[in-house]
Image (cartoon, rainbow, N blue to C red; front, side):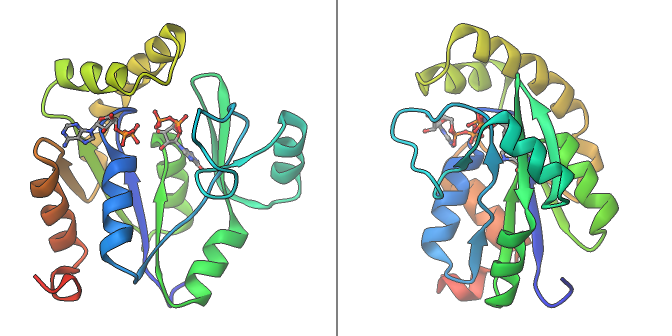
Length: 189
Ligand SMILES: Nc1nc2c(ncn2[C@@H]2O[C@H](COP(=O)(O)OP(=O)(O)O)[C@@H](O)[C@H]2O)c(=O)[nH]1
Ligand SMILES: Nc1ncnc2c1ncn2[C@@H]1O[C@H](COP(=O)(O)OP(=O)(O)O)[C@@H](O)[C@H]1O
């Protein structure tokens, strides 16, 4: 595990983590996204093995029992976890592996992989976070309400992370992430 870099990206639901990660992956072939397993239903347009491995509750429990997950947590009524096989594959390819995960999982990674670099993404304001969460138009009001309760707890824990990045202007946030990750040279900018 020491041969590659492990990068944890955490932040409230709707802050733009997925958007930032997609842009980073497009720009930097050195980066590899760990695909999580989840018991959540797929959203429209989500693709198996690309966005998540969508599994049943019993399959998820089997994976926990078998020790297949590097971390896992419950979030807004569903289970999410990082399979070891993704970490191994990314590191084996000599890549820097990104985990886009919530707070409890990030804490487990801190304990199990203290060398991991941990970054917290903040919204420019609470109102803007709520606006983004709704504008995605993919979640029920119940799911949005659950995400907002969690968002408050997560934002309060932002100080536990090595870096905090505000995702106001997307391009500015990307540049900040690239500089934290020392990717400026690789991007050719
Ligand atoms: N602990 C943990 N959290 C995860 C994992 N995969 C995704 N998450 C987090 O679970 C939360 C909910 O994800 P999702 O349902 O896709 O909603 P979204 O973040 O609002 O798009 C987000 O904070 C994700 O970062 C994982 O493998 N482990
Ligand atoms: N910097 C930004 N400015 C405005 N809207 C943004 C920004 N970053 C992301 N968004 C929008 O906010 C919504 C939530 O983004 P998403 O990447 O799905 O968040 P997360 O993965 O953190 O839940 C999406 O509609 C996305 O297009």
